[in-house]
Image (cartoon, rainbow, N blue to C red; front, side):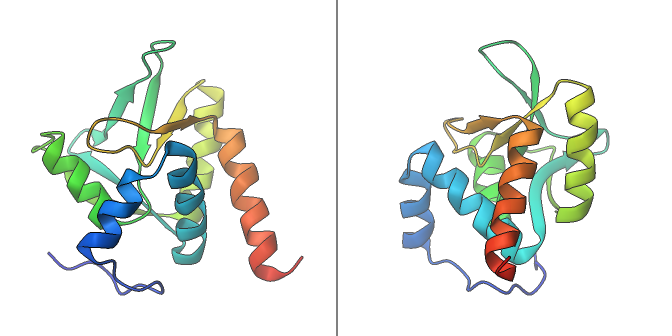
Length: 140
């Protein structure tokens, strides 16, 4: 399965394992930087839509998102989500989705590991952090 050419270098298996071993906050920061550089978000989708997980704290639905197809594939395989495919979404379209999520009181599970550890964020927090990262990249 081929994925689109990327601006950031391909990760080695060792790098993938090291990133997955990081705490959720560190993986969140990695997600923000990578997604802003690549301008793509990755997730799992089937014929009915994108994979939603449940937030144990308040029983709300959360969308699982990843910084690259490799991490989405690991989650798909180890989480036994065989009916789902790894799909990409343009970052700007994702930001539009975040506006809808806000209205629906949904959250986002950023970069969950195969054992479902993730940073669960509000749509507004994600938008703010994307903006901060873009401002850094453009020197504003």
